[in-house]
Amino acid sequence: MVVAYNHAQRAKTSVYADALEQYNRAVNYLNIDDALIDFMRYPRREFTVNFPVRRDNGSVEMFTGYRVHHSTVLGPSKGGIRYSLAVDLDEVRALAMWMTWKCALVGLPYGGAKGGVVVDPKKMSQGELERLTRRYAAELIPLISPHADIPAPDMGTNGQTMAWFMDTYSMTVGYSVPAIVTGKPVIIGGSQGRVEATGRGTIVVMIEALKGRSWWKSIPGETRLIVQGFGNVGANAAEYAQTLGFKIVGVSDVSGGVYNPDGLDIHSLREYVDRNGTLEGSDFGESVSNEELLALPCDVLIPAAMEGQITRHNAHLVKAKMIVEGANGPTTPEADDILNDMGVFVVPDILANAGGVVVSYFEWVQDLQSFFWDTEEVFRQLQRKMAQSYYATESTADKHKVPMRIAAQILAIRRVADALKTRGFYP
Image 1 (cartoon, rainbow, N blue to C red):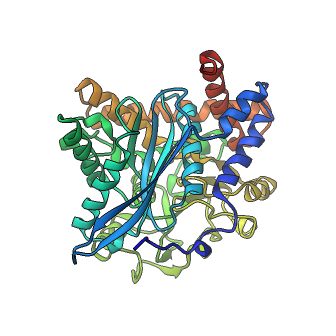
Image 2 (cartoon, rainbow, N blue to C red):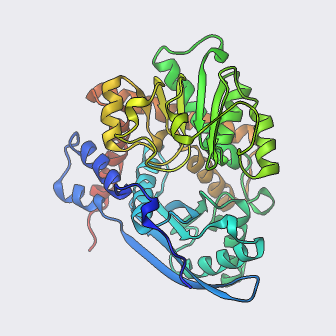
């Protein structure tokens, strides 16, 4: 049967509408042709597939998957694959558009893409996940290649998922093609530091923002962080921040959160989640809901879960003076307005969580050249890219007297528009 999804689970507003509203706000500051503005609103292509997967009990179940290419103006499209019951075409369109701006903002020769399958990966065995991934990858072969579209892991997927993707593509063409995906295990061409990259990059940008706003404290432990989402991005961000001396006072995952004003031991929390699957039942502090976590006192709030977490309904409850967006689209445009009025400094997603695609780019380059870097070199180059992008965005914000989100999109959209104008419309 086709996997059912209850749309009541999603926020009432369209994620793609949020992405378009952000875009519309930014282009008001750009002197570019209306035809270019209109062109960049639309995805270049959208792909929907319905495919069968044999379950362990012998039954066959139908699943739906998507892949959207928003832009290929600057280069091959790049973007993650997520497995989630919340996946739909609206979400994938938005994420693909944000990937276009993210890649342009940090100066990568990529356009934006995104993909996903409507599935709960936690309810599938390893064998079922492999069969689902290989069939989905086979359906995408007309679209993907190392020079056309390069997938990567996202929510609900990981390095093993990318290994299956790579092998499926390689077996189809008849030879090994490591550069077809990024975020794969190091043993088959993955990059050192890729797993930590998004979370680490988020903290790199946070530090630059604290320094830029004169909020830097000589004792990092005096800066209190809350991280919503304890998956790959949130957990790695929290652990890296703690190694630098910052105090993590709250974290959460899908089961809820834990809060301790004296600070949490992130390493022990990660061990607990590895053993139990979620934070539920941990006794490291006071149990709180995800909604309550967003309203707890802290200096920096890092939403690193799903899109649409901070809205017009709860933005006024935020007590942080800075938000650094580890997730894609966690703040709606209406919430942005409220936060700006409150004086909350928001470091936007396309800047704050770009570390993942930056190191994915490094991985792709290493695969194409068959020449690999050590971890120290990867992190050095990541630090450089993220810091450069932060200060370019901050400079644009100061120049136009706009919030950082609009500034980031101004920079990104202008770069895509300049490339599009130079290339021209085909034919």
